[in-house]
Image 1 (cartoon, rainbow, N blue to C red):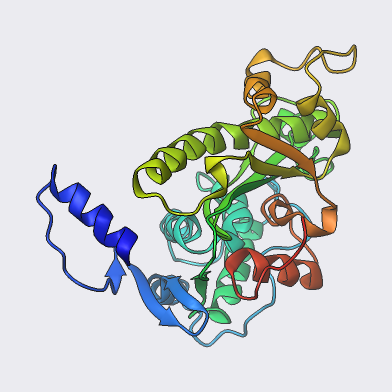
Image 2 (cartoon, rainbow, N blue to C red; image 1 turned 45 degrees about the horizontal axis):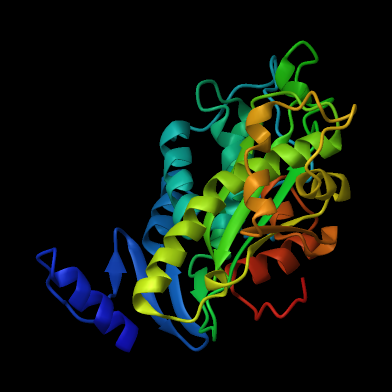
Amino acid sequence: DKIIDKMIKSLKKDFDLNVEGTVEAFLGVEVIAHKDGVLARQSGLTKRIIAAVGMEKANSCKTPASTVGLGADIGGPPRRESWSYPSVVGMLLYLAGNTRPDIAFAVHQCARFSHKPMKIHEDAVKRIVRYLVGTIDKGLIFRPQDEIVLEAFADADFAGLWNIEDAQDPTCVKSRTGYLIRLGKVPVIWKSKLQTLIAVSTMEAEYVALSMCMRELIPLRRLLKEVQGVFKFKSSVSSTACTLFEDNQGAVTLANVPKMTPRSKHIAIPYHFFREHVRKNEVEVRHISTDKQLADLLTKGLVEAKFEGLRDRLMGWCEDDEEY
């Protein structure tokens, strides 16, 4: 509380501020006291999405996406439902981008086909909605921490659409990047998207994902260090590197060894920009086992047991006491 009061007092010197007491909602996000800390959720938006698809009485499902990737399905059966596909996907994107990183991969899969959705894409959206039916009141849980630790997880699914997309479409061999950045065990930035270039190996796809994550992590570290210097709260970034976890040993080695090899020299120079920060010990790139890789949730559809284990740790639904 002293830190918050100090921050408010400092901001009042330059801005006209009104202190309105305890926050209850902000831009549609409910902020609720929870037995484990603070819960941030969007149950109102979730209910509107369910109603828009007409699935208020639908049975729930355990995961938001199939383990089989979603392709264009050219020549497949057309849509049957009357609800607006782009509108529903737009609401899902807003939900996934604010309080529900657990549906980010599934939603971004569907968003690729907003211009011409087929029945298979409609069914994929309905699966996400069925998952939301069973998790309406869920959201991110902010648990109290003794120290503010900045850490990131980066992963990639190499050529995940192979044999799913049209073989004549370059997308069929593109890989998907997934990464998330946590501050105090709470995700603050996350992304799931197809890579723009075509990686020729798993290591390259993972290295590109690692580099994309660094573009978000490095500026955030600078900001946190500046704020910590002013308000003197306990933070790991004041004296040591923040950590980025990657489950591909080849990508970890390439990030930490400042040299090119015949097998990696073709990787575009822009993806090597972060090496200077690694050399200065501002960021530490460490290997993590695949079963602990939280970003795996953002690259592909997972089986129920693995999805729930990673999701509960990612969302704060259980205490994340894993040793990384």
